[in-house]
Length: 264
Image (cartoon, rainbow, N blue to C red; front, top):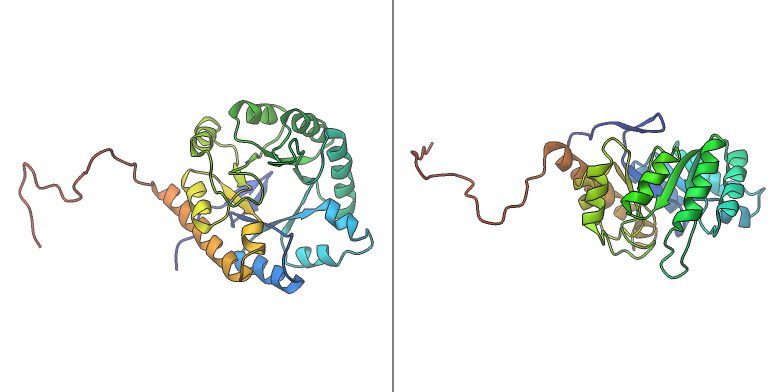
């Protein structure tokens, strides 16, 4: 059996799995339940707007997620302003009994790119109100630093636009975030489409990966959850072990110059 990755924590909550899973778009409740179990996910996101649209008295969907023994991470997907996101986060705390909130404030309808100023305003107020904020943000270093200054202890930069499946569009920016923000839990969120995308994010030193569509919309979601779980573990183990640095020229694996060659 492959060794486990190093345990980690989010806002003081210890975790073993580095695979965070979204809960939207699955073909059936049973498939969702099986995907969570197969992924080994310990954190699952739930869209509050979707839950409310189904009726505040209908908690069947939330029961499925909570019944899986995971930590619930409500999100403010669909919000367009700081005020709207703050109100939704407050409702989530009342409904789900958690201070965790994945903060999303959309600024562009085409890319669904986060709106940086509204996001920062919302994060600042929510931290003051006692929330533990997981901001969905871009890979801009300065914007990320402002979120940390506001009191966020976790960042969730995108790999690519939500649901696009394009993978890591700007590895340089993501690598820069990891190098310039040591010790900050960083989770790649959005745009992951294939297991090798997730493995690459983990090899860069990111602490976790959050994805939804790549599993929920797969032909076989449960098997895809297994594939991503293996890729995330492999990528993190590679990072912890020390991924080989690329070289511009060939380097012999068995040096033979200026010394005897021992053949056993």
